[in-house]
Amino acid sequence: MMITSDRRLETGLLTNVQNIGGLIALPFAPLVTDGLGRRKAMFVGGTIMLGGVVLQVQSLDVAQFILARGMIGFGIAFSVNAAPLLITEVAYPTQRSTITAMYNSMWYVGSIVSAWTTFGTFRMAGSSWSWRIPSVLQALPTLLQCTLIWFCPESPRWLISKGRDREAKEVLGKYHGNGDINHPLVEYEYNEIKEAIEVEEELGQISWLALFRTPGNRRRMRIIIALGFFCQWSGNGLVSYYINLILEGVGIKAAGTKTLINGVLQIWNFAMALSSALFVERVGRRKIFLASNAGMLLVFSAWTVTSALFQETASRVAGNITIVMIFLYYGFYDIAYTPLLVAYAVEILPFRIRAKGFAVLSITINIALIFNQYVTPVALDKIGWKYYLFYVGFLAFELGFIFLYLWETKGRTLEQTAVLFDGEPTEDDLFVEELSVAARRRESRKIASPERAITVERRVEVFHASKRPESQASTSDMYEMKSWQNWEGTSPRSREN
Image 1 (tube, rainbow, N blue to C red):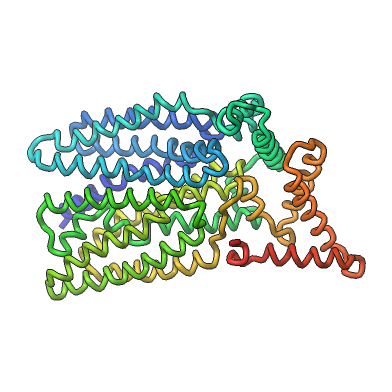
Image 2: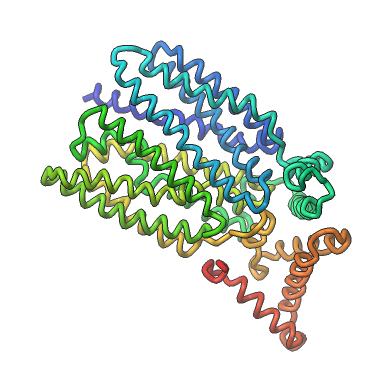
């Protein structure tokens, strides 16, 4: 019994150590991302990963292999914290959501390479190259990252935060203004970014507690922490990490058949995620999340039924239908939780807390993964298909949460999205102060969009009117107050359009 227990612990550690390494690094990753810049943070992460790959390839025992995987996870945390921020902050405004959604969808490119590599190397039974070849291939994308990152621009928002305004305008001019740093869009973006950062800097040093200090930030963290758990506790972890057990549970024993199904599934996942990424801005985030969660709930319920039928009756038909359910389930999962998990989380975070807020998402995901990878194999072994019932219940909870709390953000710049979450004056007076400062600066510069400046000033004036006794407010004031309150109602459904 002791040998079995030790073996299970070793297997769990082999599976989890990369997540544990990432969890250890995540508190430090935002410091590097904000301190050195997005590009240098990715280079630091890539360098650490390369060291881990070298250690893993020439491993002589399990202990060295585990240490190498932990080192790779430690490096990944730095790269993953910086990369989506860089993409989001550099992307052209109307293309930002699509490009950021495509970024996370590229995860399946690595998954496809991994699945089809192991499809070939599993036939090399008895040779250490059956695991060394997949290990070596890990170095290729990391080498490309460490080399090509220096050909990418630095984030203009990070440059402005460090007082390097000229460089920021050159980046904006090159990528958003066809090389013209005086292009109207460049001027507008530059001033909007600078004003937002100046207001945030007036608040002083941003600590981890700042993520929960204001109502707007608590709204963000509620969504981000929930999405971190949802993306791992929706049932997807069953196939992602234990497809071998799942397929054996429906009668598929041949290693070649299992690796073939896994390889085809990864191609299907990539196609669905990339297709959804192309329609993010047209359809909207909220509708996609709702469709995804509703679809997962229905299909996973059917998956549970067919798995139960097979395990109780050994029905070959039930086993085949289960395979179809797995593909359908992942289709619904992929349209939201692959492309939008990162894109939505990054865009709802203001610049000053973006790196720390995104680290919270990564920490939540790692905690959920560690739980999954220790609990899932034991649960499948002990109670079989009945373990699926937990996910059915949790998927129902997810759908209710998304319906109530996830707000639509399409058609907004990063700075305008911040207003959406901080824009309830009766609960967050700091927002009114920020709007007042921003409005005065726009008026003094006479550069930014006149329509937007008028809108901001109008909202500030409406709020001030709402603070006066009704007897002192004009009819026009009262009408504007009601219009503002109606638009800024707490229900996300009222904001969607």
